[in-house]
Image 1 (cartoon, rainbow, N blue to C red):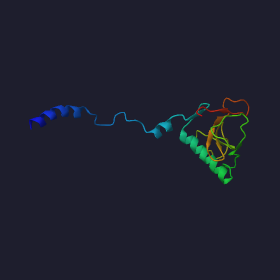
Image 2: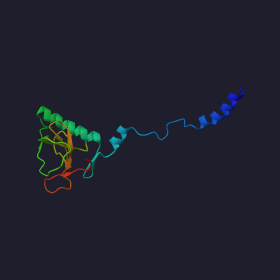
Image 3: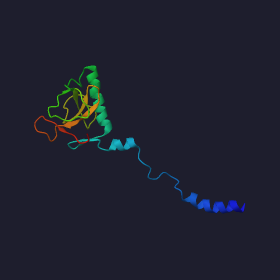
Image 4: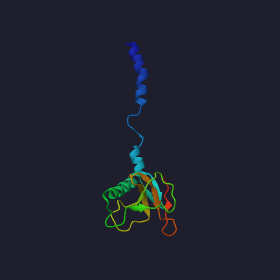
Length: 140
């Protein structure tokens, strides 16, 4: 009994010192990627999910042989600027919008580029480019 009392004297202060709630818990990775700029085009910040949603939407139109809202998007991107994209193949461009999914109308300056397999090639923008040319967005 004396041994048990002695052990409790040593263990009790240790257990009382342990935190009882999860203070400063790490943020889930998905939450971080949603807030962070995965790609920046000019002054526009896009999360990973925004870029993926635009790419998936554009690729679905390519597979179905259609375009968004009577526009010309998606369409083949000829890469006249000579970008060194992440993947090879026939490239397609589709508007990348801060306001959500592109459904027609003015496409804005930013584009997601993907190949015939729907793989992400990169993101480009008219912002900061001369004429109708493009420059690369940061992040790829």
